[in-house]
Image (cartoon, rainbow, N blue to C red):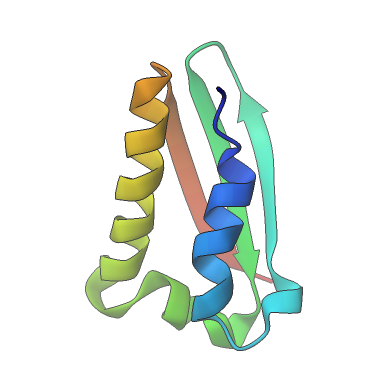
Length: 82
């Protein structure tokens, strides 16, 4: 069963932000073994998603990497604000 990385990331990020309607998660590049996913949140929610010292962003990446390793893929997550 394939993991829907966009849905997984959105479900993790949604409870963290004040403006969940502004979350955009999209795959911007998909190659054979590597997927690049972009996460866009509102400017004032960026700090909540990245966390102090990048701890929350690191935790999100760890969860997604665990799902990707089962499929033999690598996932790169870019977190930014708009």
